[in-house]
Length: 118
Image 1 (tube, rainbow, N blue to C red):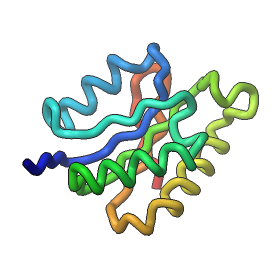
Image 2: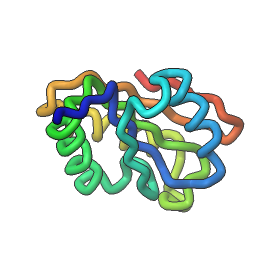
Image 3: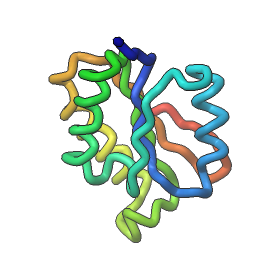
């Protein structure tokens, strides 16, 4: 049996943001139509995250990758400036080009605002 879904979404495990993520993802993709990779720091430890993205594509034939980092991330500590998050998101996007999938990047503010990074 083949199982497919629309996207794979990478985000931080921080409990403070889960309600924003859940609402946004359901509006965007519907219920149960995406794989979720929740990891401390989002894309910070990208070597580990990349393996999950590859598996999602292989097992569920996802059509796109969504990368989300957030404001005030404890995994980043004092180095977690917005500029650092944007840089890490850009690195992650470049690193997954071999998967030939469109990538969207977001910086999630603590107030629930999803800022698209281009």
